[in-house]
Length: 399
Image 1 (cartoon, rainbow, N blue to C red):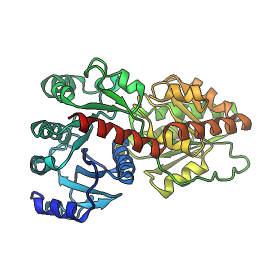
Image 2 (image 1 turned 90 degrees about the vertical axis):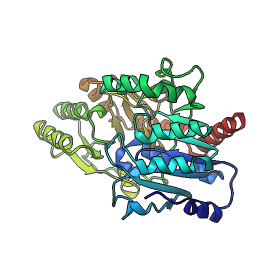
Image 3 (image 1 turned 30 degrees about the vertical axis):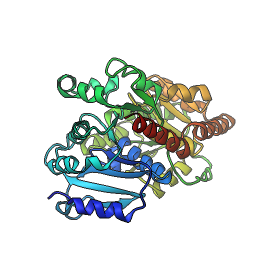
Image 4 (image 1 turned 180 degrees about the horizontal axis):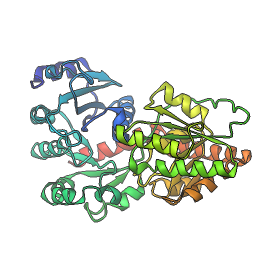
């Protein structure tokens, strides 16, 4: 079941030798799993464009990406080889013995390993094997070590941290965080000066706003996983408040999540009698996502926790003003730049007030302009690629 070394050698022989060889390890790159999968896709693109040789090792269910995972055939995508290994147990833990055996045999082919996530089997084994082979590795927690996340299944995570994770973090060459807020929350968990802040990027085509139709009012967009931490019930209550105030607004909910929770949100829409104002678009990607961003006036994400907020950056790249909770890691930057507004969590009245303010067309337009400016200043692909390559070269040269 293990991918033979000669397959790997043929792939390297067929590609031009590049200056740095990097392996990214993540439990899943299924876009529906959320931000970490998206982050890997973006990092692969910008690194390949800068001449870095990137491979990705991940797990998947049979039939998801390869019709027969037992053959372990790599998939070339965005200039990188993606290796998919079958998982034996645990949707989140993602136990995969074939992945472990492959890491033991192949990890020495790389100059550096970039590990996404911490509470997963692929992450732990990648760090373990890199350490044994004296290969430097970077840990990207992807929000899993934030204060909010650590309160979920807290006792399990506490045991895992003291038994395994502390050693993994201590031996990492760097801890890749995507915001200063995320870095600040790790001060008690990682070595001093271990954190490196490198924001992610998004690469969407130029988005032309769709013409507003008379009488529709504000077109709100919620683009995220439908998950309890995203604060969707707060947004629905705020929309109900706006209706009672006579302020016209519609809402498109783009994203997917656990079936039971999605059904609960649809029942809540009916409870608030908002069925004529709310549309569930399901999971969207590529052209569908671009279309929804172009059709919206305002992006809203009242989340209880976000270590970065890729969907927020996508909205700003489209020139949309954003309303986020004050628990978003980028909230301070958004407010200081005038790109949008941050509201306290669990306060639908306040959220309704801030949405209503954007009825003012000039305010809507000027905030959208500043959102686009913030994106171009901080979150472009070129900036991400430059910072990652500089970090990789620094670590490798010091190894």
